[in-house]
Length: 473
Ligand SMILES: Cc1cc2nc3c(=O)[nH]c(=O)nc-3n(C[C@H](O)[C@H](O)[C@H](O)COP(=O)(O)O)c2cc1C
Image: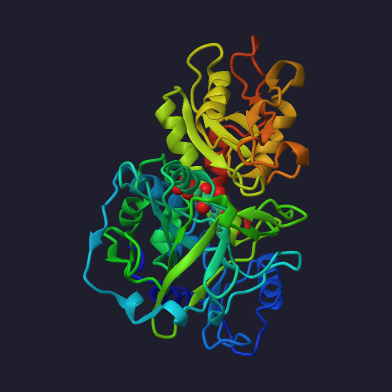
């Protein structure tokens, strides 16, 4: 079972020896983020900063970094396969949320002049960031104005004054914004910070448009997520959130604000200058007593953000490939060091016909996150979660002239991909990339590979049986 709120999760981390409380004063201005980077380098625990300069409230960070902590968050054993299995099951067995009349996030309600985003201990994460980013792990909920179906995702949000945010409204939040702009109406939007861990994990799953990720959160949780109505917008939000920011994005881009740059998940800065981005005019802030602010320090992988993306993108990619129904697929992995987006590795337990592996490559190009650049297909004797094994397959199972497909650069790219020429990624919808697919399997190559150098099964059994006799423990 996952946890009903962030506080219960923090308690579980502490009981497992995976939480470090920092009692000395830490500056929100770059220091907190630099500490977290060092913690990631050392594969350290989650951190609760209890004394952040200029604020009465604590900051929680690093709680989802690597499989051990992620497993605690979603109630799965601490290895990536078990976590993925649990998340995939949740996507196939969603449990819709339930409305409740009240919740802890309503303990304090700030409206009108009382709204002040700057009272929260929001870090400046990177020295070239355009400001303080309140939304790094904020779960953002919007609705499709045609169907009323909710969408949940995480998109960066920068404080642009006491009651305004600038944000990157991309992916499915971007589709909802487009739909509101076409109708020339403001888009209601809510950001919930410090949500139950199942909700945050579900928000980062790349689910198909039109699927309410709160159902996936319920699937992870094993019971419906309780929601309360917002105070000032027609949206619902997890009742157990720590902090809730309600607002609207005006349809007219002339009213938007400067946002960025931001040190991004690619390990590079999003841009050199700020750009005009959607503004959220904040209409209410509600929060628990002594709210815990949650955020994460992005940057060069691996870090907490890339663990989130690794799990969320892999679940999305795996489902898409299964739906594409190309036979032979066994496992799928959006690699963490590939920023969980640019490199997808797929293993096949069978190849049923000539071109089956190539069909997998083309299936990934067609169905998975559109910005994928590398697809590597291997046999299932390779553990796709082991970089070394994948590298070995690339070394000895690939002839570049025969097994590699490179496309032209007319495929949609990620505007944050720093390898794309800046002139080709100024507008998110215009960013374009080329792609590479590598068939690193041994099948359908018109010849048989020589035997692998491995002990016979008989000898492996014998050695296993006599292992202690050799003096090993
Ligand atoms: C810390 C963090 C920050 C993220 N920031 C953004 C962002 O600013 N823009 C974006 O498009 N995706 C961002 N993502 C990834 C999306 O949250 C993720 O792809 C999610 O599935 C998008 O939801 P959607 O498919 O409903 O649009 C972020 C993920 C994490 C873990």
